Image (cartoon, rainbow, N blue to C red):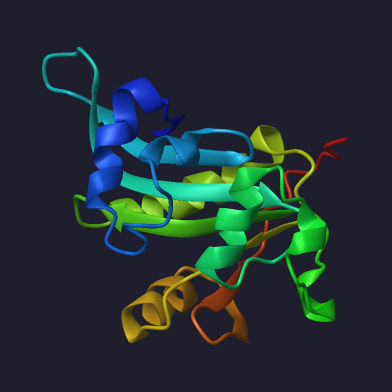
Amino acid sequence: MLIECDADTYARYIDDDPIHPNLFADNLTRFTGNFRVYADVDKDTEGFGFKVNAIVCVVVCPFLPQAEEQLRLYATGGLGLEKIELGEDERMGIVLCPYSMWSYSRGAGKRLVNDLLECAPVLHPDVDHVITMSPPTLRAMHFHIGNGAILLSPNAETVNYAYEIPDHGFTVH
């Protein structure tokens, strides 16, 4: 089951991030503004709380992130987009960008991606695209291609993979 994580309960999981462990000075940034953290969870065996299977950190932004520094600048808010140098191919509309993901159990990452894609039109109705900012590794490539993404843009530091947002037969405004 997909849930949006709050900082008080889930900030401790950010220490496990294998992809961008030092992205922000504090882990709370991942839970504020246009930054969100989602988890694939199951109810625990006692029925109290949740067992976390996988975590994904995302940002909703008006550009295609291709480097950690762009996310840091965007997170400050005060700098504004005019301080971020964007190429023509980076102006993509509103992007839901998963930038870090890790799993605690087999298959949970795939389930988390699929649930996020299915819920994206409701959770983020202004989003035009779901495009990752992934590490340039074979493991990341196999994961995203295997889950239906297409290679969009290899960059100096990262690789962007694009996912299709499922059409549920309704228009979200």
